[in-house]
Image (cartoon, rainbow, N blue to C red; front, side, top):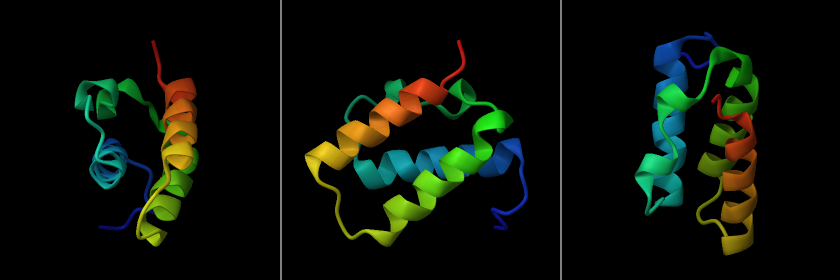
Length: 74
């Protein structure tokens, strides 16, 4: 999958990947359809960062969830 291509499919793939890596308990909190392509680059950065780390601290997860919350569309 070429994540350099901005598409809804790639956005959904990254959001699901972030959700899996963070082991989000309330998965309904992060849905791919809650984000639009205007946030693609930011979500890509988060996706790359999350996948580089073997584990995330609670503080990192809280910060990432807060950032994702700011990107959600109403």
